[in-house]
Length: 305
Image (cartoon, rainbow, N blue to C red; front, side, top):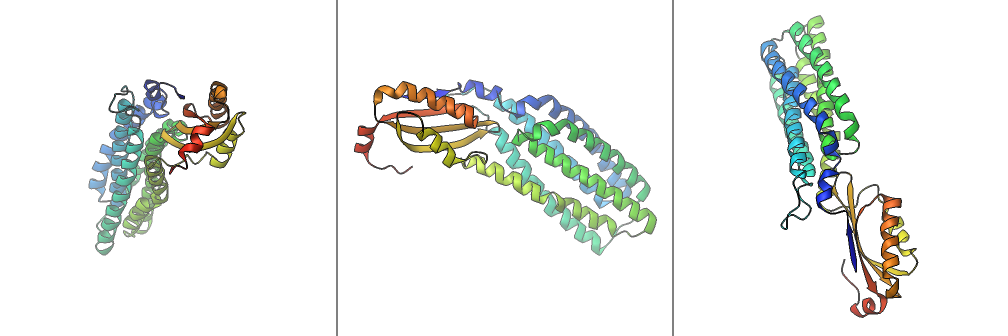
């Protein structure tokens, strides 16, 4: 006897990222507009720090586009070939964002090394003006995305990119002030490299989270020992086998398990109790439990998973 709910078609509508689509669109509009301004400003002033910030904005825009594409795909219904639909596009989007950011950091550090050897002339005043405007844009985008970053891996990826860009704008402002006051041109490539490196730890965490989900890892907030104990404490359950808990996409965890009962006539009551306990204690609503008779289960012998 098995039970699975909610229907797969309902998963897409419940993704955490979909609830913040409007905020993602707003942040994307701001990012694309100012990215063009920063590219022009970076080329005009000769500032690597400003160009590095513009490059981060480019990845911000790409990340936001990927996030919106992922949401659009997630809204598509499930098919016989893809029974979960496309909700995992969110996780793939977050993974792509993390990889792009890490590769971009490598490029920025290389360019900083080249400029450290041959520092170009830099226009501090215009560089400062563009960076200050960029800071304002990034703060607005962060405000738009902050709510969704705690519930959606997809939105979190976009939020981290905007956060890195905000820090980049601060770095460019510092570099511009140093150049204007002291004429020390090496401040630009040094801070440019710093902009690239500062976000690496957060990006690495995002990358690990995405890979963990794709590897069907246990959600970090789930205590497996407590979960198994909760199932075993259900009246009538004598053993719990083949227990698996994983994340389908941000905000949607799933569980499957075999519950062994001594009296098969208790199957219905055990099934209801298991579903209710998973929802109430662990907020897991997508459940699949198979009820097994103890005698038949012992006849089968041990299982691998």
